[in-house]
Length: 219
Ligand code: 5GP
Ligand code: 5GP
Ligand code: 5GP
Image (cartoon, rainbow, N blue to C red; front, side, top):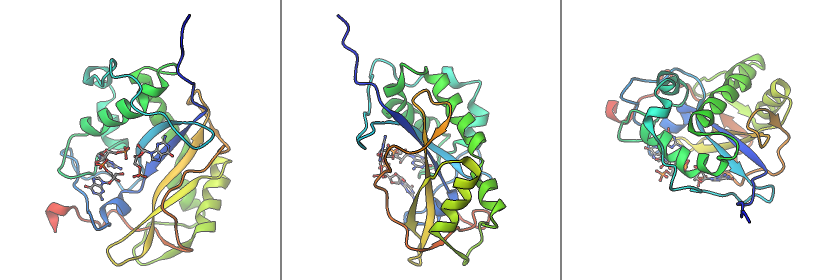
């Protein structure tokens, strides 16, 4: 008799806004491959249960293997850059995401498939475009309401996202991460069965520029 780990129910696909990551008190470090473009970037694709809990680090016998993503590396550097300090080349961040989250979805994809699915979801979501279509652009000192940001994404994607904020060095709330729910095969956005418990946004939210941001080594 086979004992199978409880299958998860859906994924959170999480993207970060680099301007808000870098603009926080902790600051950021650009990857060794250079400052990323002014666009959302991938944080991870996380299996989740409908009750809000989630599995993690599911298979230590299947560690991250660089060679399995070598053909994706240049795209990952663009779309899934690492902004943590000290500067890295991304492999450490991708390893962390695969081992903590990806290994819990081995029934759906292998390592390469995990990264390919996330890249394809990012393209589908096209968050920056969705916001721009609603006149929401990354500009320092300009504020938007939570409702208008959420509506812009809902209108473009068809499903409401969860928006998480952090706080910039002057104490303003800013759009930090966008969570979207994805079906258990990792292919399409769905209505969220449950929203995460992220840091709340006030009603006045900044969407800071990234092109004018600095990394710690520049300060
Ligand atoms: P934080 O405490 O920074 O919000 O989350 C830390 C880490 O815990 C995340 O990067 C992610 O790996 C994991 N995590 C936090 N919340 C959730 C969640 O709702 N679902 C899943 N699957 N992982 C989460
Ligand atoms: P999670 O919060 O997904 O469990 O953890 C993210 C881990 O990846 C943290 O240990 C964090 O230091 C590392 N990391 C490396 N680069 C990044 C990045 O650009 N964004 C985030 N959120 N975490 C990163
Ligand atoms: P981890 O402890 O797992 O490295 O990171 C925990 C959280 O702290 C991550 O979700 C990530 O968002 C944040 N974090 C980690 N390193 C950095 C950093 O260098 N700069 C910023 N701004 N946040 C970081």
